[in-house]
Length: 264
Figure (cartoon, rainbow, N blue to C red):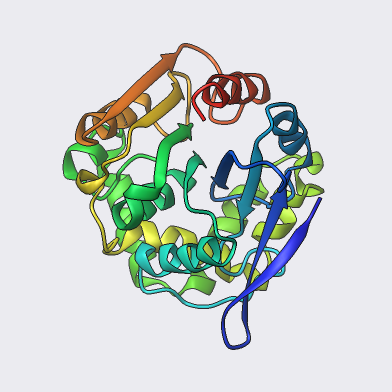
């Protein structure tokens, strides 16, 4: 594994992993709300596919410097600086869960460099009224986002920590995904939900690149109806709905990667 730090402005660093860097075919991964750049198993999978895998940290996750962001666009521009420095001109994107929104935002800025976007267990476009209404507890979800928009990143992070800490098992709490997400006193985690809650700075209606989505109907975190509506808003998308798999299933995740590797 090759973990590196990119200084995007003075004394501000963003971590990333650059696997299989000798290959020209490139896949850039942006993970979900709980995530890590340590993706050794996935990198091994893509080594067999002769594909470079770049996994980029969120601002403040792991050993990345924490910084308050105005909206999704600010983070997207940091990613562009990194890709320019690495001289990555053409690539595909893999977004998992909330990482999908970062993929969409990036495409609105540099779609000419993005070959395809692949999304596993997508976060829905909750800033679109017709999408958020697909949630069965619509009024409660709407109040949650209004609540997050008013809170500080620290307050949001502590709220999310207390909520998920009761759900996650002890094995997950030992993982890199868990530990890296909770860096910087939960502020980075809190920022992730706050970005979803306030003005995004972009619209998914402006995404031009083909988006391939995979979602399970038994996903209890993001209802498939909301993802169906998100796919309708995207100009160029293909949604595969499966009956089982939940929000995060290792078997279906690798099956999806098998599919996407054929399109790189």
